[in-house]
Amino acid sequence: MSKKLVAYFSASGVTANAAKTLAEVTDADLYEIRPQVSYTKEDLNWMNKNSRSSIEMKDKALRPAIADKNTDIESYDVIFVGFPIWWYVAPTIINTFLESYDFSGKKIVLFATSGGSDFGNTVKDLKNSVSETAAIHEWKILNGDPSADQLRMWLNALEV
Image 1 (cartoon, rainbow, N blue to C red):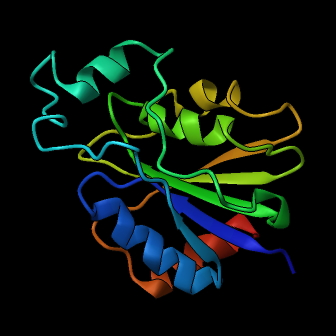
Image 2 (cartoon, rainbow, N blue to C red; image 1 turned 90 degrees about the vertical axis):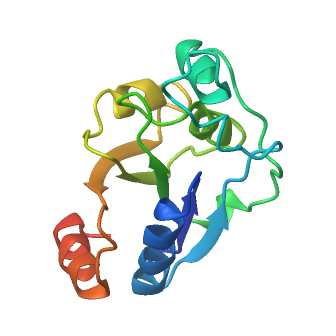
């Protein structure tokens, strides 16, 4: 049986709720990807092109710092990585997280929350942030606080 980690970034709490339920269902450890500088409501105002999130998403080279890099990724076989969808992709803090560890030979399973879009170019954008031997899989958009039973059903199809 593989050892699992649910790593997530949540700006508003929605992704955190999905991550916590997923960790319970999969008997996985839980790790919050926290920015070194927390996002304010103004930072997240996507309608303001000068907001922090808008600036970060415009410049794909920007890597917001994460608060800690102390997770023992080496001890996990499967890492679920969750985040809200911003501008049809993962927030660039997810790139920061993926670039902070060696995911060689790991299975990375992406889940997200979204106000209306799907994964868009997320997998393509994240592949360059991990080694070639890491396998990134797009899994589910987990909106609406999915139940443990729903997650179990979806996980059975994923075979992790």
